[in-house]
Length: 207
Image (tube, rainbow, N blue to C red; front, side, top):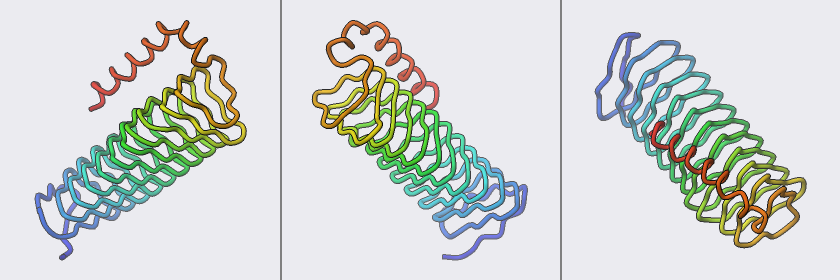
């Protein structure tokens, strides 16, 4: 792996090698490995991307790490965010610590001390001292000191001080403060359908 020199106006189409950007503004970057620090970039395509104390537009990579950083959209197999934020994300495994996002579509999601708009998941969703406006998953949800507005899951496990406004779940283990449970929630089908339609609309708009 070799380092590639870049200047503030470079568009770097290299498909191999490593690119490190520090304190510069770059348009588009393509490489095996990209590290961005104290900089602003456009689109990034790589196998591995690390953005630290910087910002990016669209990121596509197998592995993405945001450290005190932000991005418009992120797509990857594994996306890790620490003290950072995204507008939208799509990942097989999404982990957010002290961060936030507007919308995410993920296979598995783990949030710690974070906030989220809507999560559309295929598997496990875990919230620890976190909040989300809506969670829809075909898998299970585990919450501890966390809350959500709309929660739809196969099974919900809760710790202390967790709640949902509307919850539809096949099974609930633990104490959960829910305004509307599965029975009462059926009466709010129209409202739920509206929320679901909004989430699907966001999905089409953002991706």
